[in-house]
Image (cartoon, rainbow, N blue to C red; front, top):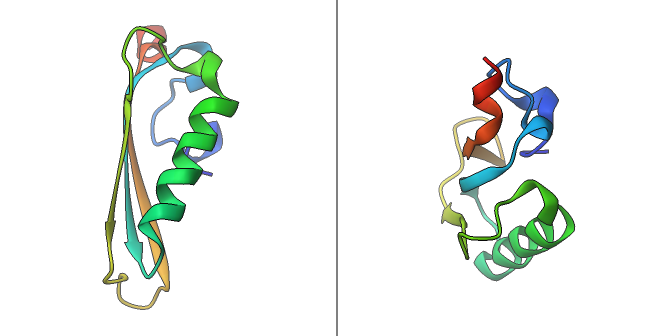
Length: 86
């Protein structure tokens, strides 16, 4: 869901560019190992949306304390070449 174009807060469509880097911050009780595995799966499955000349360009962090009223949440920050269409 993080990488879905409909969840972006910008008019640039990330499918029209490639990610240089991305950071995903998770809040709530979850396994760090599972988060890392899922992020690797996302990058492998969508490799055409990431530049190949920057290795390990997705970072993830986990905070065990969930936001008030929620079990978990996530924040995504991505640096994409799609911004050039703005």
